[in-house]
Amino acid sequence: MDLPDTPVAPSGGERSLRHDFLASIVVFLVALPLCMGIALASGAPPEKAAAVGLMTGIIGGLIVGSIAGSPLQVSGPAAGLSVIVYELAQRHGWGALGVIVLLAGAIQLAAGLMRLGQWFRAVSPAVIHGMLAGIGVLIIASQFHIMVDDRPRSSGLQNLMSIPEAAWKGIVPSDDVSHDDAARIGLLTIMAIVLWRPLAPRFLKMVPAPLVAIVAATAATALLALPIKQVQVPDNLLDAVQMPSVELLGHLPDWGVLLTAAASLAFIASAETLLCATAVDQLHRGPRTRYDRELAAQGIGNMLCGFVGALPMTGVIVRSAANVEAGGRTRLSAILHGAWLLLFVALLPVVLRLIPTAALAAMLVYTGYKLISVKAIRALWGYGKSEVVIYALTLLTIVGADLLTGVLVGIALSVLKLLWTFSHLHIRLEAEPERSRTVMYLEGAATFIRLPQLAAALDAVPADAELHVHFEALSYIDHACLDLLVNWEKQHEATGGSLVVDWDSLAARFRNYGASNGKTRVHANGPESSLPASVEVAGSRARKGDRAARSA
Image (tube, rainbow, N blue to C red; front, top):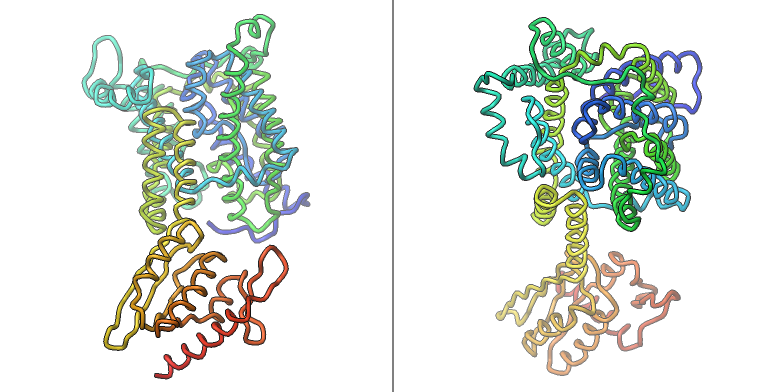
């Protein structure tokens, strides 16, 4: 993607206004079908699904766009939250969901004011990609049923296991229900999304593929008079507003349960938003994201969404990338896209009622497929098999249990991997009897936890051997292991052996060790302190021995 030629400015002139205006139209056209489709995937009541999704997009544009810490990021309902929203709505009811979203927004606002924005980014990429892939699988599993005008099952696993049944309904015509007609509209939608960019004329490539697909599916449904389900939109957007009432508050679950649900929603929404903001920063040369401000802005937006009974929001990479690619320069493009959504819903609700739900579901099936990124798996493989294992277990737990459990399992595995990395030490000894020499290779972290292992390896060195220690693959060595080497050298010299360690190189690799005037020093507890004279002599002797060995 080409970067904007002109830096993004907080406020622009006539040129910025023109770019922002055009970009806002593109983002509006991308957001319009996604807002409605994600609302359906989130389990919103059919009669108000489109409205609650669009309300979130409007709040994300007009309110959050005005105060966001990432000027070019566009906020709205996100496919990544649809799974957890569906689970919460099924568990606590759609009315209680508004209170949960309001509380989640309050948690985000408090976290932003406490400057915790950077901490929400401290999640392993393997967990994030595993979370997105798990969400993708669940979106495909649920929306595949809606794509054939069938009802989703009660859980992600049941949706996944019953896909063959839904596919059969879409292939074999039925006398009473037009599953096959809906399936054909769904396939038309997916084909239009896939083929638009490579086949569209150059001057039309800026038109979003999802919009082209929805228009094509809507036109086909109308021209063929297909008896399939269509989007339901109230005549007045305010009819879909559901503010917390005294009656609702009296029927809410335990507040501890609500706070736990809100905390999980806030965590996932914040992680997705701030990771999206980081990705957007890589797409332009303008001001970088102010993470605490962005987190607080998302909190305000979600509090408003919860108050009116809309869907929760996050920063959304699809809309944000479209904003940058279309030439957006300032936050005005995000604000205007919210204004266009509001005007469209207020003036043209009859147009939205023509859209088949099968087309919106098909668009989300394709979105779910894109979330399962093979490219991400290959990238993780480059960092080791453990990253792929974390990815896979996170994905499987999300599909088999729920989103929050899957994310927590992924984070726990990442922490265990970190502990393993900073406590694992691999030692390899290579004996050269003909030269009375032994070479020791250290890999990993030499800490006091692995002191017995290092001591056992040193005890295995022949009494009269010259031991060369290589630490090029060592990531860390602490004072305890260094002391062990020094003390072992004294004992080893008494039996006719010697130790060769390049102390100067060790000082260059690890900042807690330094060399001054030929003497090895250790920085312990802050101030610099010299080692005992015997160690300094040993270090000097080791360097001389190492130079002699290299010259030999």
